Length: 335
Image 1 (cartoon, helix red, strand yellow):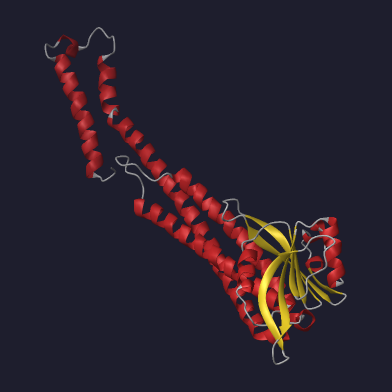
Image 2 (spheres, rainbow, N blue to C red):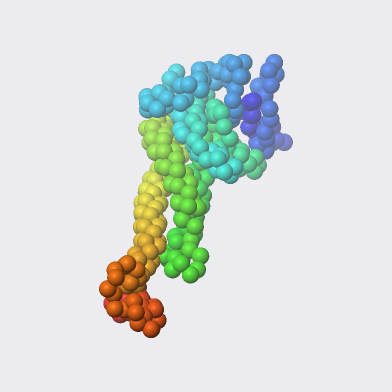
């Protein structure tokens, strides 16, 4: 599917060119390319759609296999006057199936061409912002900067959501503490799964930010080829934003690792508390067991067996020994 963003121009009463609003349209086979197209967005393009776009920009489009390559030379390069940028973007976050997808940006002939096989949320956002433009002149360079701004903003929103989720998990863990067996403790299985999900999402965000950082750095070195001479200040600001987001993602990764270690430590403490209870019970009942074992022997000469109150005395000894052991543990603060 090919979606085009274009801005029509006309002539005013004074004879000067007048810019119209930006609009979006579909480009179909055997239909001429509309005038004023500044951004051609290809989503899972077919063979004829690729050939159609190549004929307009005068440059070849990378295949899906080429977009998936990890070498920098295969992702960032200039060929026949066109600047090729392939970045790894996050997708599927809202659907609960986070993943990454390669997206190629091609700046050629004052137009922007994007090739993708998924639906990162930055694209609808960038398209919506372009459609809000009224009379300001739009070019492929402006569309590229608008799209990269949307990508960075979307990444910031994702990191903010991760930070909020980690904060909520931290409160659930550290405010609850270790279960005292009289109240229901935290469900550590669910907590560890939640930490794992945020950890995986953070790792994917770091991967995307690394790719985006390389993309912005390469674009800064080829500003003239991409037609971004008037956007040097914005490029510097975007570079700082990406760097700060990378630092924030690294900080989140450290928090997640600390939280995971803390939860595993609390699990060990909780298990130790359970084992401690069984150990104390074993020690408490050891003296009564000894007494019962002695008087359970089948020896012929045991004076206590002939006592009138031998049974009551043995029961009392077992009770006193158990209570005494428990009191000793309490006095030593082992319980």
